[in-house]
Image 1: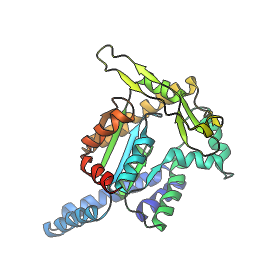
Image 2 (image 1 turned 180 degrees about the vertical axis):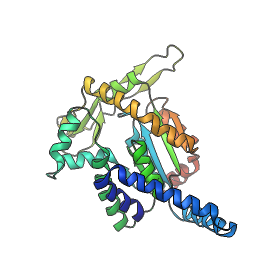
Image 3 (image 1 turned 45 degrees about the vertical axis):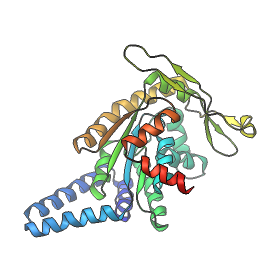
Image 4 (image 1 turned 120 degrees about the vertical axis):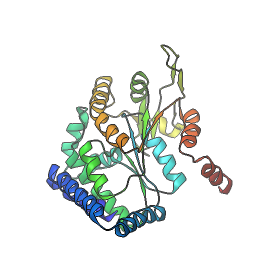
Length: 289
């Protein structure tokens, strides 16, 4: 984790230069391993496998804005005992602060634009340093990497075990985003949309119950400034254009798991656990709760 933090912090000031440096270091390391005697190469591979066995999972969650990355990543975070690091939360925390980036971020977010690599890496760097100081092991990254440049930076200094790509129809995504609400007092997220889409043109039906707030939060609900239909559709278009290279990057490595959400949490959660081979772990946690 220390290596991730150092490289990400350097990237915040040097942008693409750091990615190039990371690629050079990766090429040098690969070349060194290929030219080293077989015993040394084998020892390096064994050491890497041993290090992976001694740490917790290091996963990435991809998916369009509003697909539910945060919901499923946070559930898995609790199940597996690893930190859930969401770059969207990092951005919102910075927006709520009086930090030097807050004004710049407010303008970017309200226009439905994506935050630059430099800003995201700067925020993530601080979060990783905090976790390192607290002795965290493993992670589930939510919303990062968002570009191939970011993926290369991350790939150059740590092993990503798996990348879960959550997928949902665009019409459902838009309706879901427009139903999002936040309690201005407790900060929890809710969704007022009741989605009931009939199956057609070979697509399955999708039903998602609303996630309603308790009575004490109902009068304090607010809508995010960027949750308008125009902004949501623009954000989805930008994401789709940028996500394909990142998906291809991890697909080529054999690490991409694509998961089509069949509905809301009651329908999707058990099936996600199944494809991740985590049913037994969920049962053990329920048995000891």
